[in-house]
Amino acid sequence: MNEAALKMTALTGLMLGCRVADICKFDRKNYFYPDMPKNYQITQYDQPICIGGAVPLHEFAYPKDAQKSIAAPGKAVRLTRIHLEEDVAKSTHFETTSGIDFNRAGTPLMEIVSEPDIDSPEEAFAYLTSLQQVLVYGGVSDADMEKGQLRCDCNVSVRPGGTDALGTKIEIKNMNSISAVRRAVAYEIERQTDCLRRGEPLVQSTRRWDDDAGRTFQMRTKESAHDYRYFPDPDLLPVDTTVFMEEVRARRPELPGEKRDRFVRDFSVTPYDAAVLASDRALAEYFDAAAKGACNPKSVANWIINDLLSHLAVVEWTIDMCLISPHALNELISLIDTGAINGKQGKEVFAEMFTSGKPAKQIVAERGLEQVSDTGALEALCRQAIDANPKAVAEFKAGKAQAINAIKGQVMKLSQGKANPALVGDIITRLISG
Image (cartoon, rainbow, N blue to C red; front, side, top):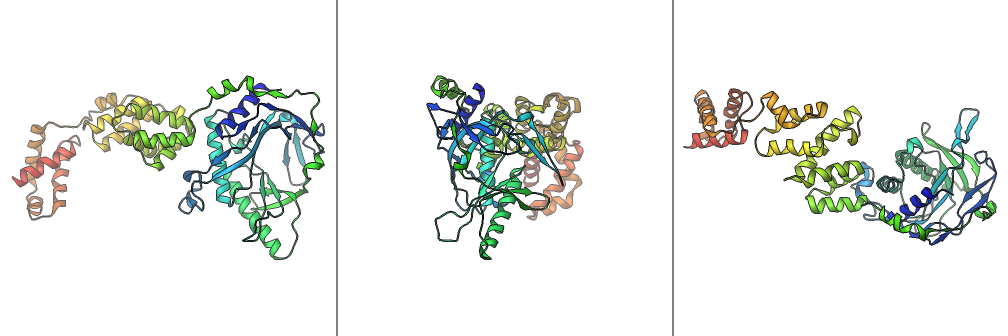
């Protein structure tokens, strides 16, 4: 019995709104597959640890190309149960042979079973994306499908429009990414629909998805529950979950949806910005730390989404590897907001901060970048630029507002880019108009 696995399963149940049973028990599921060497699997049948619950499908969990055409906004996919069982061996299929790796067999595996509420490949994508975020937030799993930390079997059935009865259930296996799940479900819906239109019967079975070929292949016909001959495991006692639930409740984190709502409410960011920032727990914590000490949290969000994430993507770093602390990012934004440096200089300073980890003020001082905001000094430069650009002055007086840009450009050149652009514009306008 793995106590940590039991607690993590109960925590997952709490995060997804399940009822955690006071008493759960383990059963033996008997079958012969090559990936289960002892010919039975320890699992939970009629008394699982978690019952009910749901996974919310928030707007930004959908694929980007489907976010503007969501069929059921605000939908939540109901869960049947969450139970704990033992994992099987890993099967690797080659062209003419298969390999079996028994090293993971017997380790704890949490299985989350949903109700048949998912109506499209896009909803399947959103379901897994939302679920993945919750699991990572709770520290239950890194939930990386490509590393096998999160696996998904899809049961697909089709039915004629206007009918309620579910069609024959066909299971798909061997999908190693959320995008692959979307592709596999889309293919299988089309395949089953074509079969029924041709009058071919569908048989309950398990099929394998081949992502390279873009199609499914039948592996075996599927047993029903009574074929597994479940019975209580005689070697494992029932579990009283009440003895550890207080500890588990204390471990429940603020969930992605709760964070998104708080970011919008407390920091006045857009729902899109909130969704991006809350999509990863470490990123959300970084933004939280930066925004709480900022005069303009929206500006912090913009710098993180538009600049920090782009730089991290180029070097393939996670936010935990970033050399710019939340406080250091705030310092840079403050220098820009107070006019000490302009936005273009801010980008240059940020780039050096990212590679060196130096504070913004130090870089500004070393490069001599601090903006000139002394009105006396700027007025002298503006007069010099006005005298040198009589044509632009005449056009500005004639109502061509854009003509001022030539004069401003001259001032920036004279100041070697250090003049405060906003002040320069105000001074030029005053001098010409006066």
